[in-house]
Image 1 (cartoon, rainbow, N blue to C red):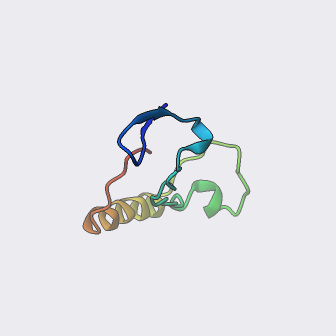
Image 2: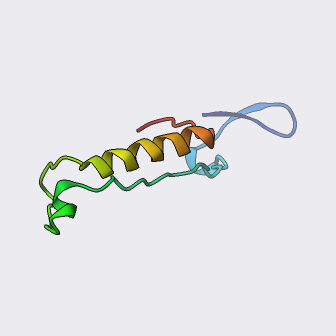
Length: 76
């Protein structure tokens, strides 16, 4: 890695000598809406279950709220 030194000469540096800047960002966690298992009070942590009509409404409302707040995602 090359680095410009104080006296304008270019010198080689090791990766451990380069100042590392912390990465910043935000993480968003959104819980799914009510599922058919939630409705029946059944634990289904490893099963792929559908959403109830109310759960679909919750998901739509969450999407609308995110859009209103102007949140842009880099990855999902």
